[in-house]
Image (tube, rainbow, N blue to C red; front, top):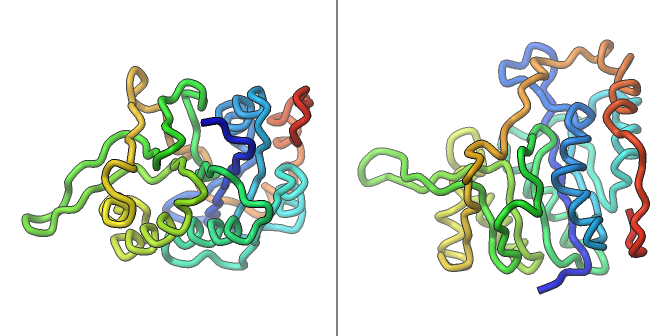
Length: 243
């Protein structure tokens, strides 16, 4: 099946200085995200639309994020909700209101780095693609399937099912998307879920933990230079798709 439109969803969670869990800054990983996710699609003549749900940081950085991504839809919030999946759910709601509808969705985060690009992954665009494999965790009688929640690929017709599955997963510890498999199996069936092979590179999706806590003044003073260094030369798609 050939899709004419794809949608790249980028969710951003930023913690303030001193946050024990660190933080994420799109500009740090922009080139990696472009090379791994966007460039393979654009080379195939695919239109990539950006959507994001992000916490406000400082006016200059917020404005530059919009300039860089040219989002078809985005939301800035003053404070992130306690559950991690809420950012996923909110950005998916943006997609449901977009016209004309997109064909497929890549859902990821700003703090994810890729050691493979999309062309190197064994994706099945007709299913929900999840990284790795699901492992059974928990006490006897309460065991649930846990999966990597950093990257998902699925058809747009499955967005509503993904929203419901994320909401159910968010009832677990930290409100994460790790527990999305069980709800998905009930909603769309086990055969509609594919686990992307981790071979031959076990860690083809990793978290960037280089940002140990943001300092507003420091980041806003030099983020423009960091972004300029990460972007490199712009390219134009010769097949006529929007870039």
